[in-house]
Length: 399
Image (cartoon, rainbow, N blue to C red; front, side, top):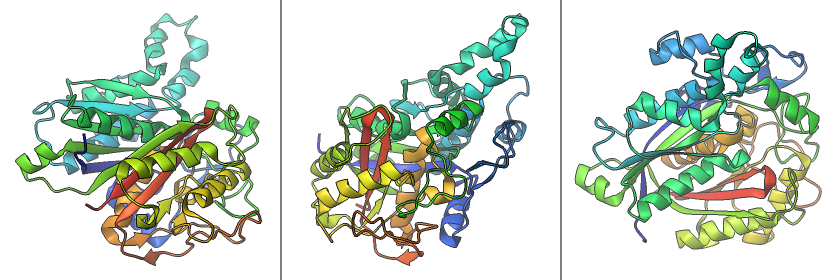
């Protein structure tokens, strides 16, 4: 049960790049992907900024070499791009050569297709073929089919911690001997439904998001997909595979505080971090960098900061930053893309900057890293907290 979980591949598409290399270049150069809405129709265009991927569905279909006559959602298309890169980077030629599964996650699912055809279903029966695409699980099945995967497929939807829980579930399946290899991550596209929903909650900013700043006003939504390939030690040794990093710890908790808000004392976040540290066997002093959830909403950043102080102690919180000022908040994909960013941080001995920060939150003495910083990083703690109290923490290690 104590075997290591090796990460042998990763893939990503986000508003700052269409693959791992492009994302790394943007993080290194401080190039964010927050812009005015261009890729779908909404009355909020010009007023609300998002982290859009500037590729149309048609361009994604061409990139994936799919038939133009399909009912594949944007969420699925993004997931296919990222999952394919992850599998290729892991050097997998026979995806069914070992007991292999896919644990994907999404919040939005096929909402973009539903929005497009919803009012046509009754009058145009031929459009009803698109109904199946709405389900969250549909995207997972489409991704698996694109990869040629015949093994276990499952879908997780725990709001903004979804991909973290997919990664956690994949690790547990390997540790318990159910699977040898699992492709894990998340994908979400932008949609009018999501944009209007978050706008109704009044947690969107009218400018660029400012994580952990005292004057933060809210988040920018984004779209993205990212997947990791987790493999057992046995496969790594047998195939003499290159390991990018290890998943050394994970934890999730639910403080059942509120449908959308985090608790004032950060209890869910505290419990998730505590559990992740316990499973990893690491001491809190071993954590070199925290990729915080850092959505730039007043409630989240305050709650997360309090939880970090409770875990690490006053004036002892490791260096941290939020990368959501680069990509926007990508919902179910957030923990996936930030897992990739965490691994890149370790590989290149870099802490990526917390953009747009000016003033410390007045309730505590915490300042994120605001400039690209060189640092030897052996262990990264990555937080992802979702609506409904769904709090999850992952720890990535070099060895």
